[in-house]
Length: 512
Image 1 (spheres, rainbow, N blue to C red):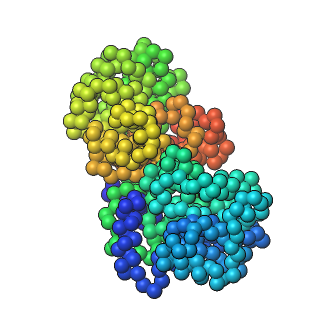
Image 2: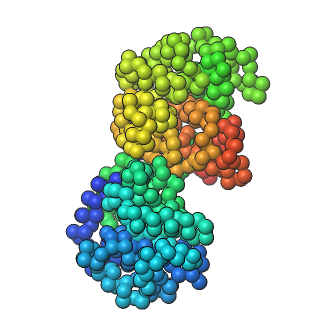
């Protein structure tokens, strides 16, 4: 992942790493504590986020250091003239010394303390902002019943009255590593904004994190980069991708941009293969062959540039092969897959091809032993089959699941879903920042496979191809939704023109 420069905000660290960084920083802490810095940063963002400054700000202060951050924020907001009401959900004697000091400062600033039971019984108050300082990255179990009831009330109140909610570090109840609730029965704060400290956290950007974290702001708390370990996980953002695709030379021809063969299209599933072929065309492949298991149509009336062949008649030589769209799981499909894996061609493996591999240890061994580029594009169910785990296991551990797939099959993996994960066999990974529920419809995965195949044919680097394909695929959906198409009812075919537009922007307009 050397191409392009990642910002500090794009670096992702897990909870264990954050604790190590924090320990090093605390050993060199000056007169201003990390908690004081976190509280001030929270207050500054809160002042900008408060929807209606005529209404008070409600602060929920939990029993740990997250509560201490909240008290510090309340102290600064009160001194700035905001009316602040604080719900203390902890016991003074059980707080750390820093949190006790923060609480004392808050009490001295003139902010109002309220009983949470009073709020539960009188939920009609209007608030300019609600600050969630209940729980941070240390929460391991579901909140107790009273706190869970409070969280549900806050979510309902914020939704009904359109009140912004600012979470401190992570929305309470969210696992910062996985993006899932901390336990199966845990409730989560629905934040519109999250300010996270020291470094960005993967759970804010994948799984349920994308639904609960809202807009994420990162504050490093002035901690020196010297205290940070080497980073191997990042957000897949636009800027680092801009130098990968280059403008095309005048002295070029269709052979300069690679041949792509789509292998799929069993009876009744020709549409999947055709979608992948069209996507490869819109993503810039020089020539596209759509190779069908069932009887191939004479041509695609909408895109006559695509050449059709029967699967048994196609040569894979010199082509990048996309295996799986509409392939089915027949004996003929298995034979085609086995043959393709044993070639030296670059591969993109999707859909039923993944299911065939999951059921055959010999295919798994062949795939692992390949030395040429390969991209796997499983959704969570396909990933679960490949790993012989449940879908819940995969979704509760999306990053480790992607790393295990990449290592086991010696391939770059795009684990699809909310915050798709791109991972190489060395364990380096990225969480994609684009995409929305419009992509939760039939055919969008076939489009992604076709785009990945076209980019792999042009670039020859599977990680670069996967990164760009995933980003532009999601961004196409984002742009369509922003302009009024979807998310409900958006079709896979509608993505194609947007994908072409953004690939061209990467290659041309971004350079000027």
